[in-house]
Length: 320
Image 1 (spheres, helix red, strand yellow):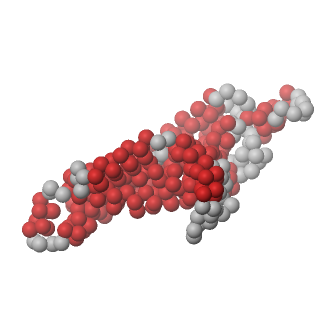
Image 2 (cartoon, rainbow, N blue to C red):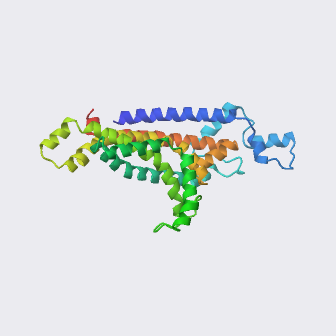
């Protein structure tokens, strides 16, 4: 097991290095000059010598290969650099301010999706080809097909215009703001949007896994022993059907940034997704490169943890 973990960590490190190189190359290939964006388009006119001095301060006058190794070396030391556009603000500070919001959004969305998707997936599998099964199939198809930005805008219109006009404040919740995170209610709409697609995917995966497990020999053996059907389902079927769900969870985490970019932009949330898009538009090299590498490390760690959870849930994997 230790050799396997060491091998996976080594592969993960190679992936992170390759991603850092590709991100660095793409950012440098983008048109525009971050120094010009930093100075703005005001009345300030700088000479060529002054512009070169500013570029030298940020290390942009060095060859690209040297720029990469300087940045990578500082990254290994835990130094993410400083922002060009935000006038020298440390990137680590910007990430510390934005990352908790994105993590909370995704954790809440994942918990909500699992709480609802697993029971509905089991229910649909046990009531195969019934109204329940068809209803969950339709709901799952709608959840997968509905774009995040459209759902976000519809929820903003619904909760900002119509619900206050119809019923006023929602009991026990109060007024749900259409954007921002001034109160805890600001998490409600973004979490609903982020969990909608995940819920649809988890429901279908759980249904398929349960249907595949129910005809197997150990389930028939449990039934022949006279065990209650509820115990058979939750104790034996569900535990063996969770492996595909865990695989999908690990896979979905790789799309944290792509999902939250839209949601955080629409709801004006100061998370990693919005910080990333703003930094790309402004050519803030250090911020973009640090965010991409950080997310790559998170994905590698999650994939490793997912593989280790297989052995915890299914003893057969441990034996093999």
